[in-house]
Each structure stands twice: as structure tokens, then as C-alpha cells.
Amino acid sequence: VERFPLPTETRVMTIANQKGGVGKTTTAVNIASALAAAGLKVLVLDLDPQGNASTALGIEHHADVPGVYEVLVEGKPLADVVQRCEEAPDLWCAPATVDLAGAEIELVSMVARESRLQRAVAKYLKGLERAGERRVDYVLIDCPPSLGLLTINAFVAAPEVLIPIQCEYYALEGLSQLLANIELIQEHLNPDLSVTTILLTMYDGRTRLAAQVVDEVRQHFGPQVLRSLIPRSVRISEAPSHGQTVMAYDPMSSGALAYLEAAREIAQRGVHETPEPARDAAVG
Ligand code: ADP
Ligand code: MG
Image 1: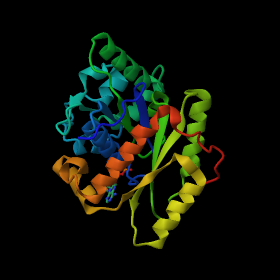
Image 2: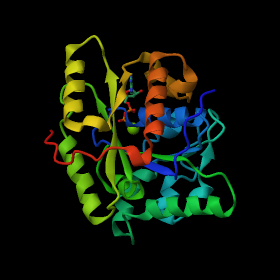
Image 3: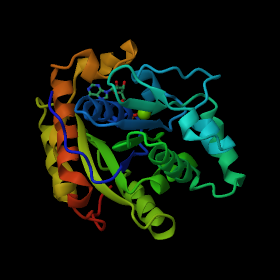
Image 4: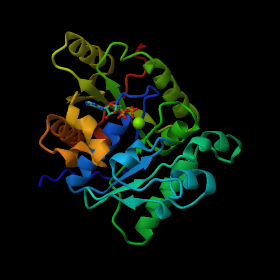
């Protein structure tokens, strides 16, 4: 089995795009599974009340299961809610349950409302270190399709942002709003934040439009865009109903191989080699 390089320190990446259905969750769970299969320890934080990442990773997330809601709103330690996923030896997930939908409102009046996730993650990583347990190599945060307080918490908790972009007409629409928000967070809450990675998803090689979108995105963002393209694939869309990522469901399918390649690129680029974002890119 291929091993990917260990990052010099824990890499925390937020997977965000306020548009729904662009492949955020699919990207989070499949990159996580691929990294874990390559020998890395990976934690997925499910910040979407829909709990799609929890479902795809095959972990319990009914209303009574403690998850990200308890961490953010009740101050429960992350260590008390993470569950081990069956797919890989060191793949973990903090689940989202339905009550997380209320957190968006409940957080508004709370102290340090934007940095509660960041504190919880820092405490968790410290705790592992103190206990002499294995370090987490990657924390991947799956965001809901909005720019509310849950997503803001993710931006404050992570230095890196991964934006999945669907290869379709209007792909760049709304991105300027996302980038402006990221810039605001950078100015006020997390100076280390930057868009390090862009992944093109649902690529359909038969259409000229998809190729045009790829060109356009590469022109705007340059080296941040991964070389790997994720194809539109039925196997990818089938996998969640089996409580699996496509990496486990059909590892030799085109979708699984593309996610493996994308994960390899992410691991090989390393946190310090990723390019500066083209922040003035006029998009959308
Ligand atoms: P988001 O989290 O951004 O809302 P999802 O990852 O849930 O998006 O993807 C939206 C839908 O598209 C899901 O039903 C998912 O299974 C499907 N999907 C995602 N990526 C692909 C792909 N490459 N090929 C086919 N279907 C995909
Ligand atoms: Mg999602």
C-alpha cells in the first residue's frame, strides 16, 4: 500500500463553498479516506446539520449521539464525540446531528462565538499529545452550504481552505462572495487563513462546457487548482447510500482513482509549499 508523506504539523483544512451540491461533502470524505488509507491519521469534522459526511463515513449520528453540536454549544470535549470509522484504521469523525441546525442561532449570543471550534480542536490536539497518543495528521472540516456562524467557526479553526468547484455553467458565480468573506475572516479573526487548494468536481469530459470551466478556473486561480479533476461518476453518487466513501465502495472506479490522485497531490504539496492565493481575482 502506498504511503503519503507526513505533514510537518497537523494540517487543518476547511472545505467550503456556500453553494450546495458542488461536492463539498463528497470531497471531504473521499480525500479523508484516501489520506487515511495511505497511512495518515485523519479526523473529519461534520459541520453540516444534514450530517451527510457522517452518513458517508458510516457512523452513528441520530439525535441522541453527541456530536459537533455538543462541542460548539455545550463545550463538550471533541475527544468525547469522535468516532472511529470502519473504512481505515485511523479515520475518525465527529458527527453532525439534527440539533446542529439550531447552533447557528444559539451561537449568536455566545461568548467567543466565532472561535469555539478552533478552541475545541486545539484542546483536542493538545490532549492527544499529552496522553502520548498518535498525532492527527489531517483535520478536514465539512461545511454547510452557507456563510453563517458554523462556516465562520470552520474558517477560524483552519489555516487552509479547500474550495470544490463544480464544472458547470455559473461555476464561478458566488465565488467572489466566498473570497470576500474569507478575506474578512483573515483581517479580523484568523490572519493565517488562505485558500490553498481548489478542486474541480463533477467533470464531464464529453462536454466542451466542462473544459471551458476548467480553463477559466485555472486562469483565475493558477497553481492553487489541483491537477486532478474529479469526474462525474455514478459510483461516487451511489457510495453514500452504502454508508461508504467511493474509496471503499469501488476503489478501482474512475472516481475513486481521481480522489486518490487529488489526495496524493494535497499530501505532496504540503502546507508550506502551497501557493499564495490570487486574492484580487475578479470572479463571479
Ligand atoms: P455538497 O456537500 O457541496 O452539498 P455533495 O458532496 O453532497 O455536495 O454532492 C452533491 C450530490 O452530488 C450528492 O448526491 C453526491 O453524491 C453527488 N456527487 C458529488 N460528486 C459527484 C461526482 N463526482 N459524480 C457524481 N455525483 C457526485
Ligand atoms: Mg454537504
